[in-house]
Amino acid sequence: MKKLMIYFLLLTISQSYCQEMNLPVHTQYLADNHFVISPTFAGIGDNLKIRANGLAQWIGIKDAPRNASVYADFRIADRSGIGVSFYNDKNGNTRQNGAKFSFAQHLILDYYTKQYLSLGISYNINNFKIDIENFNTTYEIPVLDPSVTDNRFNSNNNFDIGALYRYDNFYLSLNANNILAKNIDKYFGAEPNLLLNYQIYSGYVIKGPANSRVEYEPSVYYQLFASDKRSSTDINIKYRKYNKYEDYYWAGISYRFLNDQVFKPLNLGPMAGFKKSNFYFAYSYQVTLNPLMSYNSGTHMITIGLDFFAGISNCPCTQSPVHD
Image (tube, rainbow, N blue to C red; front, top):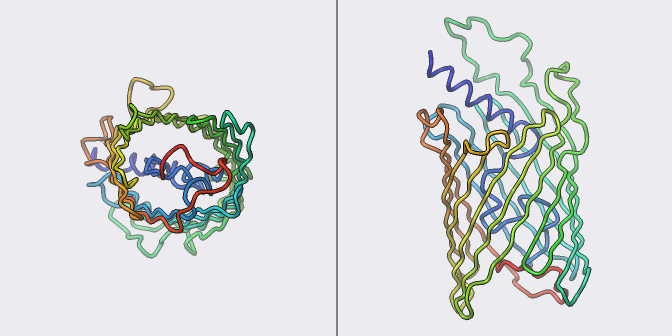
């Protein structure tokens, strides 16, 4: 019975983060793909970048969350970028799939000091349903919930907006996701209609000694949900090493905590990856550092990517300080 309660708690926590018209953010953005965080990064770097993510959460827990996503962004002209992402999320008998379509405009604030401002917007569409065909009656629950019918299919539309400031190798991204209230007519007020959440992402690329071809990138990611004021923070550090062909490998670690429990980490995870020519691969692992860790072996994520049509823009506002 105790183990069943633990499973229920895990899935409840997962659902609170997953079923909000937004994929849960683990460490996808640290796989050299800041576009995961904000539409403002669309078009910064090489001309076409594709990243596919597969994530298995809480290995060892039956029906624990699984999701897959694909991100692609590229530059159009010298100062604009567009991007698209698709995702499919499974959590027990609930399903989500959807897409985001993004546009970003990049501006030069000061050419000589390398100060740039990017503005971005995303249109989101999300589909949600419950797989009632998988429901099974038990001795404890002999009758299915009569209020759950027709898979409870629902489709919602929303928008994200963001701004990105860059000064040489420093970057600061401010975002508001799901700025419109959610349609909850089908749920009779049982779900929150305020899905707005705010995100701050900032970091700095530190160059190593001359001719070392080394970079260090500390970063911080903060997320606040407007509905219940819960918030979390990631503290990250990455190391990159390049060769003369601009191929590289990297390694890092991420530390996540709830902001009312700073010294009680929620997740801790190492990660590593490499880029060889146009191919990119990364792996990350997160372990949940609380009493629930006894019931699962952590969260695993793999990222596979391809870069096409590499070319330097004539405008420095779309040239990234990070070698993508």
